[in-house]
Amino acid sequence: MSPAPRRNHRPTQLSGPDGTTVPVVALKHRERWILGALALAVFLWLAFTMATNPNIRWGKVAEYLFFPKIIDGIWITLMISVLATVLGLVLGVVLAVMKLSANPVLNWLSTLYIWFFRGTPVLVQLIFWYNLAFLFPTLVIKIPFTNVGYLWNTNDVMTGFTAALLGLGLNLAAYFAETVRAGIQAVDTGQTEAAYALGMTPGKRMRKIVLPQALRIIIPPTGNEFISMLKTTSLVYVVAGNDLMTNASQIYKQNNLIMELLIVASLWYMVMTAIATFFQSKLEARYGADAVRLVRKPGVLLKTVSAAKSATPRAADDVAAAGKDLS
Amino acid sequence: MNAQPTEGIRKASPPAQRGKLHVQASGVTKSFGNHQVLTGVDFTVASGEVSCIVGPSGSGKSTFLRCLNALETYDDGTLLVEGRHVGYEFREGRYYEWNTKQFAAFRSRIGMVFQRFNLFGHFSAEENVACALMEVRGFPKAKARARALEELGRVGLAEHSHKRPHQLSGGQQQRVAIARALAMDPEIMLFDEPTSALDPELVDEVLEAMKALARAGMTMVVVTHEMGFAREVADTVHFFDEGAIVESGPPAEVLANPRKDRTRAFLAKVL
Ligand SMILES: Nc1ncnc2c1ncn2[C@@H]1O[C@H](COP(=O)(O)OP(=O)(O)O)[C@@H](O)[C@H]1O
Ligand SMILES: [Mg+2]
Image 1 (cartoon, rainbow over the protein chains, first blue to last red):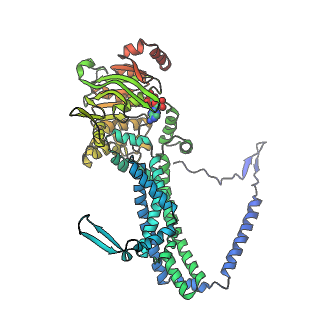
Image 2: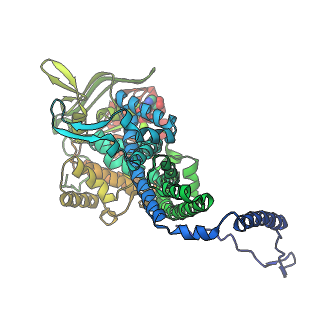
Image 3: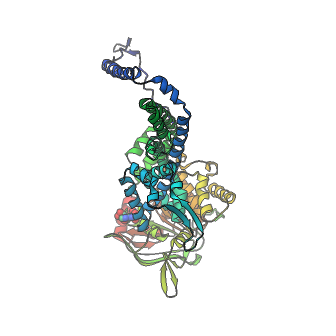
């Protein structure tokens, strides 16, 4: 890969019209300095009013920052985020494959699912799952026409935690299905042709050839989904899921330190998203370039990319091939 | 396929004596919506024969080739490969449409090389070749790997086996694609303009690999604009126009003294 162009190289001297070296006067960005100073002033004023507000007891913020109940909540929040994201991803792939399948029934069901879960607020879904016992007091898994199986009390199963997992995971699946579908469709149809021509069945082609390549396009957005999931878990507090937000709210309902505990929770959310964002950027750096290469449509994007790295043989080929692909 | 006689490209015996009819098409038609792409193709290839199909763009050559290995369905006519009706099984007085497994099994015996190579982008050259051996033929990993290296060596790419497609030149990619198809021990090889997407200086390395294959006696159907290759290697040249084969014969006849005006007009443009 060629090194990035050095943008900060500014000559201090150039050879003048008569051949002698003359100094270069750099452009002074006055408007940048003025705008920057104004914006900084507004920011400092806001920060100052917060920091010196007599109604915020910062000592209490520090006291509750590592309070055991808060730390427990962080773990639950992380656990719900990870598990709900995994559930959403797996189900999202299934939904996307259903949506692309030749079977009209699967197709229709997938569309219905996506429409339903995207059409109703996630808050409603959370409360719905939490209160499932109103519809089904017991949950039964058994072999049909026999008495062999398991029976649970719905209220024992549908804790705030499981309601949160289901609500958030099923909801994410509906959104994620669209990402997966786009990823699958972005894989060149030539890959499918080649797989079929070698004698692969449609299922093998999907599992071995198409999905692995679609993953490189699907994976970068999953980081975003996870980051947004970290914060969406705060909704779980309506079903008392023992997450960070639930626990913070339980504390402030007792001691009335509402602002202080909201700040504590916010600080932790910011730490979690900062860490997740760090990994997200690594993920994108790892998969981003491959994703572009794999979407082998000789369009504007490819040409731009090829021009940028015309040093590699592959990119040069693509331009040549794109030009000749007219027959 | 291993023996590579050194004397010339032409095979000793004329095609008719070399084997039974491998492909037999008569009156094959195909429409996309209202657009009739194939208007009635009559075409035969004997075992061990090299057939070149030439003709203008959009005349339906690719579509016909895709019908030959059931990547595309045809509407009407008869299409026999190895004596079997493509897409149908005859049983107790009826034709039954093939299921997915039958389609896959049929295609696994027919090698196809595409204009745009279509190598699997997430696999190395070796994995590209080994993949179908494991997934379709059920080879264990070590055996598939050994076979892949053998096939890559045959097209002169043994030392590139670990490279991903994007690290290979177009000519090398196309040779990997040929190795990938050959690894499946195909009964027939189909080539759809295998050199059209290549820079001119890379065309020869691919044509050489194909010539070696022809010398080894492989049955081949080659859609190409490389008239030099057709003249040198083909037993029969077919001129394809507006969805049908309008003229066939030995390259010396069709390319040197075309009988039809349309063939003449086309050849005047490409030669
Ligand atoms: N899947 C398809 N759907 C609709 N039209 C198609 C499809 N495939 C090919 N065609 C049309 O069929 C005609 C012949 O195409 P093709 O077989 O690729 O010709 P050739 O290979 O001789 O250039 C073209 O007009 C093309 O637009
Ligand atoms: Mg074509």
